[in-house]
Length: 405
Image (cartoon, rainbow, N blue to C red; front, side):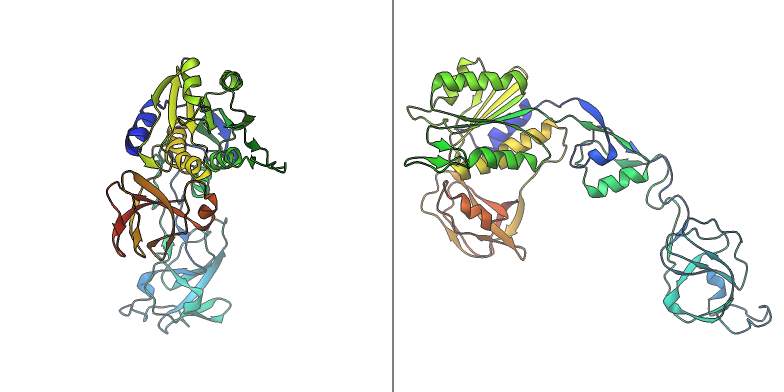
């Protein structure tokens, strides 16, 4: 057996990067960026006001300012003459001279001569064209041209996941067409004589197929749209035929069930029968030990355990990172270290164990968990705790490795 880290390393080493394609900006959400994005303009493109208020000269507001030369009627300290109103999208028409200001709106271009915008809350309107500065705030309240990015600067690096905030950046630099990595084509197959589809009432000895729909949902969470091939019984010929058919149209086939050492566990043998090279088929992990990974030229086959928690966890820990790497992602989900919020113990410590936990208030709390068939435990969890082999007890406050879900 190999460790989970070794299995992940093998899988990631095998992953090749898909080709790129160009999509509309609105269709690029949750895709992986395939080229660096350089801004074509300064961001912001001009000096703009960060608040509603009055654009003025700081020199006219300083305690040392000489108001003896102020125009008639402005001899009082901090009285300024309003020369224009500047809305967002309007070019200023006048330059701010001594003892002058312009009424300005958030996002509007700051006029020449002004080096500060006083918030409207720190002013008192004396007349239509006279304002008194009443506040003592020192904030400049001006976003300087290019303070976020200068023209020609790197806005986004390839390999990142495009989230809503990246959509905003792409739009701001004029990237209306976005080059992203293609999505791999995936088939999902569930195996087992005992399985029936969710809309059916199971007969005695049957169960509803949760794994197939669970895997499909996990892949959709990273913007993939796998094809569901259905349920195949524990029949080697039927299984061989279904996997072979799936490989005609897909680069990746993911199966659940049929991977252990039972009389009807045919998946590893079928992989070999189809001339796929099995790269590993046992991981020193609980749950999920009988996990198979195989390659046939540019196609990949995953055989995940049939227990729902096992298939869920191995999809999160192994399959999804592999797919993200194929899609060009440079950053993959990783472990974080947090303190235990309560004591934890287990009887056997031969293998690394992954258990569902709730991450709350910066600490880790195991949830009720009955084993690899207890998928309901994960509805109460938002993380997965890794307990290394040889560890039976973890005390409150001990730093542990946890993965958020």
